[in-house]
View 1 (tube, rainbow, N blue to C red):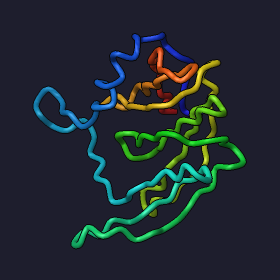
View 2: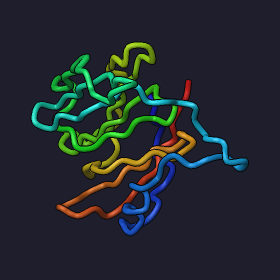
View 3: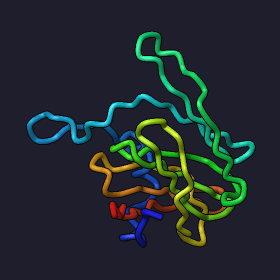
Length: 158
Protein backbone atom coordinates (compact mmCIF):
# COMPACT_ATOMS: atom_id res chain seq x y z
CA UNK A 1 0.00 0.00 0.00
CA UNK A 2 1.30 3.44 -0.83
CA UNK A 3 -0.33 5.34 2.04
CA UNK A 4 1.72 6.09 5.16
CA UNK A 5 0.36 6.77 8.63
CA UNK A 6 -1.80 9.87 9.13
CA UNK A 7 0.03 13.15 9.52
CA UNK A 8 -2.59 14.86 11.60
CA UNK A 9 -6.25 15.63 11.88
CA UNK A 10 -6.41 18.69 9.66
CA UNK A 11 -9.69 20.41 10.44
CA UNK A 12 -13.40 20.02 10.94
CA UNK A 13 -15.49 19.18 7.91
CA UNK A 14 -15.72 22.84 6.96
CA UNK A 15 -12.66 22.15 4.79
CA UNK A 16 -14.14 19.16 2.99
CA UNK A 17 -15.97 21.19 0.35
CA UNK A 18 -12.76 22.99 -0.56
CA UNK A 19 -10.76 19.79 -0.58
CA UNK A 20 -13.13 18.18 -3.06
CA UNK A 21 -12.32 20.98 -5.50
CA UNK A 22 -8.55 20.41 -5.39
CA UNK A 23 -6.95 19.34 -8.63
CA UNK A 24 -5.07 20.46 -11.71
CA UNK A 25 -3.22 23.62 -10.90
CA UNK A 26 0.15 24.62 -12.13
CA UNK A 27 3.66 25.32 -11.06
CA UNK A 28 5.10 28.77 -10.39
CA UNK A 29 5.64 29.39 -14.10
CA UNK A 30 2.17 28.20 -15.09
CA UNK A 31 3.35 24.76 -16.25
CA UNK A 32 1.19 21.86 -15.13
CA UNK A 33 2.47 19.93 -12.14
CA UNK A 34 1.71 16.62 -13.86
CA UNK A 35 2.25 15.63 -17.48
CA UNK A 36 -0.33 12.83 -17.19
CA UNK A 37 -2.91 12.98 -19.97
CA UNK A 38 -5.92 10.78 -19.29
CA UNK A 39 -6.72 8.17 -21.95
CA UNK A 40 -8.68 5.97 -19.61
CA UNK A 41 -11.80 6.48 -17.49
CA UNK A 42 -12.56 4.60 -14.27
CA UNK A 43 -16.00 3.98 -12.81
CA UNK A 44 -16.59 2.91 -9.22
CA UNK A 45 -19.39 0.33 -9.02
CA UNK A 46 -20.78 0.70 -5.51
CA UNK A 47 -23.23 -2.20 -5.70
CA UNK A 48 -20.66 -4.99 -6.04
CA UNK A 49 -17.48 -3.33 -4.89
CA UNK A 50 -15.60 -3.09 -8.19
CA UNK A 51 -14.00 -0.69 -10.65
CA UNK A 52 -14.53 -0.73 -14.41
CA UNK A 53 -12.16 0.92 -16.85
CA UNK A 54 -12.64 2.33 -20.32
CA UNK A 55 -10.44 3.58 -23.15
CA UNK A 56 -11.50 7.04 -24.33
CA UNK A 57 -11.39 7.35 -28.13
CA UNK A 58 -9.16 10.30 -29.09
CA UNK A 59 -11.40 11.46 -31.92
CA UNK A 60 -14.96 10.76 -30.81
CA UNK A 61 -14.48 10.83 -27.03
CA UNK A 62 -16.54 7.63 -26.81
CA UNK A 63 -15.63 5.16 -24.05
CA UNK A 64 -14.86 1.51 -24.85
CA UNK A 65 -15.09 -0.93 -21.93
CA UNK A 66 -11.75 -2.65 -21.30
CA UNK A 67 -12.00 -4.36 -17.95
CA UNK A 68 -13.40 -4.86 -14.51
CA UNK A 69 -11.68 -5.44 -11.16
CA UNK A 70 -13.81 -6.99 -8.43
CA UNK A 71 -12.74 -5.86 -4.95
CA UNK A 72 -15.16 -8.00 -2.94
CA UNK A 73 -12.45 -10.16 -1.41
CA UNK A 74 -10.63 -7.07 -0.11
CA UNK A 75 -13.31 -4.36 0.17
CA UNK A 76 -16.56 -4.40 2.09
CA UNK A 77 -18.00 -1.37 0.33
CA UNK A 78 -16.71 1.33 -1.98
CA UNK A 79 -17.71 4.96 -1.70
CA UNK A 80 -15.30 7.37 -3.40
CA UNK A 81 -12.14 7.24 -5.49
CA UNK A 82 -9.41 9.56 -6.66
CA UNK A 83 -6.73 9.05 -9.32
CA UNK A 84 -3.16 10.07 -8.47
CA UNK A 85 -2.05 13.10 -10.57
CA UNK A 86 0.64 10.98 -12.25
CA UNK A 87 -2.04 8.54 -13.41
CA UNK A 88 -0.32 5.52 -11.86
CA UNK A 89 -2.67 4.74 -8.96
CA UNK A 90 -6.26 4.94 -7.75
CA UNK A 91 -7.29 5.28 -4.11
CA UNK A 92 -10.74 4.08 -2.97
CA UNK A 93 -12.56 4.69 0.30
CA UNK A 94 -14.22 1.70 1.99
CA UNK A 95 -16.46 3.02 4.80
CA UNK A 96 -17.70 -0.39 6.00
CA UNK A 97 -14.18 -1.84 6.14
CA UNK A 98 -12.72 1.42 7.47
CA UNK A 99 -9.95 1.18 4.87
CA UNK A 100 -8.40 3.02 1.96
CA UNK A 101 -7.57 0.67 -0.92
CA UNK A 102 -4.85 1.32 -3.49
CA UNK A 103 -4.87 0.07 -7.07
CA UNK A 104 -2.03 0.48 -9.55
CA UNK A 105 -2.73 1.49 -13.14
CA UNK A 106 -0.85 0.02 -16.12
CA UNK A 107 0.00 3.11 -18.18
CA UNK A 108 -0.19 1.23 -21.49
CA UNK A 109 -3.42 -0.73 -21.06
CA UNK A 110 -5.22 1.10 -18.25
CA UNK A 111 -5.54 -2.23 -16.43
CA UNK A 112 -5.89 -2.15 -12.65
CA UNK A 113 -4.17 -4.32 -10.07
CA UNK A 114 -4.89 -4.44 -6.35
CA UNK A 115 -1.92 -3.02 -4.42
CA UNK A 116 -3.15 -3.17 -0.82
CA UNK A 117 -5.04 -1.29 1.84
CA UNK A 118 -4.52 0.85 4.90
CA UNK A 119 -6.85 0.90 7.89
CA UNK A 120 -7.45 4.54 8.63
CA UNK A 121 -9.21 4.85 11.99
CA UNK A 122 -12.18 3.74 14.00
CA UNK A 123 -14.28 6.05 11.79
CA UNK A 124 -15.58 5.52 8.26
CA UNK A 125 -13.51 7.03 5.41
CA UNK A 126 -15.88 8.58 2.88
CA UNK A 127 -14.71 11.43 0.65
CA UNK A 128 -11.24 11.55 -0.90
CA UNK A 129 -9.15 14.32 -2.46
CA UNK A 130 -5.55 14.32 -3.65
CA UNK A 131 -3.11 17.21 -3.34
CA UNK A 132 -2.21 18.51 -6.83
CA UNK A 133 1.42 17.42 -6.36
CA UNK A 134 0.24 13.89 -5.42
CA UNK A 135 2.08 13.85 -2.10
CA UNK A 136 -0.95 13.83 0.21
CA UNK A 137 -4.28 12.04 0.16
CA UNK A 138 -7.05 13.81 2.11
CA UNK A 139 -9.69 11.57 3.68
CA UNK A 140 -13.00 12.79 5.13
CA UNK A 141 -13.89 10.65 8.15
CA UNK A 142 -17.49 10.00 9.14
CA UNK A 143 -18.86 8.85 12.46
CA UNK A 144 -22.53 8.35 13.31
CA UNK A 145 -23.69 9.80 10.00
CA UNK A 146 -21.77 13.09 9.95
CA UNK A 147 -18.25 13.91 8.81
CA UNK A 148 -16.27 15.26 11.71
CA UNK A 149 -12.68 15.51 10.51
CA UNK A 150 -10.35 15.37 7.54
CA UNK A 151 -6.99 13.62 7.76
CA UNK A 152 -3.94 13.85 5.51
CA UNK A 153 -1.92 10.77 4.56
CA UNK A 154 1.52 10.99 2.98
CA UNK A 155 1.87 9.07 -0.27
CA UNK A 156 4.99 6.91 -0.36
CA UNK A 157 6.23 6.94 -3.95
CA UNK A 158 8.59 3.99 -3.45
